[in-house]
Length: 88
Image (cartoon, rainbow, N blue to C red; front, side):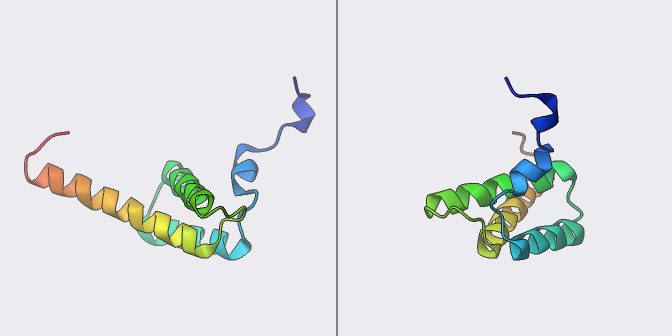
């Protein structure tokens, strides 16, 4: 069991291994798209998964940009389903 003083801020833990340029791209995307903090974390997790699939120990800007694109596809899919009357 770890001491309480040694616990990291959860966001700091998520940003570990993420290049500075990737963080800038993530923050810019979140601001422009009006994403919530929950979406910020989800995009970051997807970006980390993309890095893992490439056997990269570092999340780079390209991983973040691809993750944001997937987020946009998810949003578009939800909008399309609601407008057509289909339910999930």
